[in-house]
Length: 179
Image 1: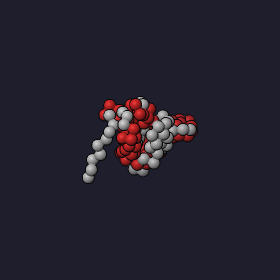
Image 2 (image 1 turned 180 degrees about the vertical axis):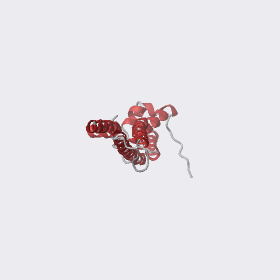
Image 3 (image 1 turned 90 degrees about the vertical axis):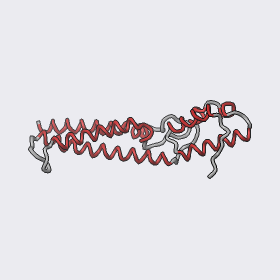
Image 4 (image 1 turned 45 degrees about the vertical axis):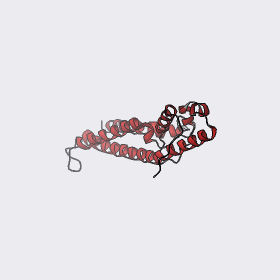
């Protein structure tokens, strides 16, 4: 196995790689981007800062669509949304039993699915927020700081919190119906 010796200044390369990782680029996409930079520097004989300018600005223009990490990010987003929905249904099921003053639902006290569901729905929303771009449904195109369109913003940033809001609205409607 041959290890590539890059002709890229370390002071330029590190912020470039960091910016690509922040956008969700896979190791393969980062390696390809570094290869293109290295080839251009080898051909021109210039330093990276002179040839490409600011590494973060240049990294923002690198195309990372189709990256393996993009698919992983989408899978994370779908799993977190599914967990949020399961949590919502458990919460509303348990809350309905509590409001109707039932002793048991499916052989357990209604407070159990209520608490478990509430923890799941909140944990899914918090996890999605903490993961940020690592759990996005839509990936950021080259040169953009956010995926374009209102739907992308809603699915990437607000979807888990919309599930939390729907859980609260559902609880309110159940309480109004039974009181």
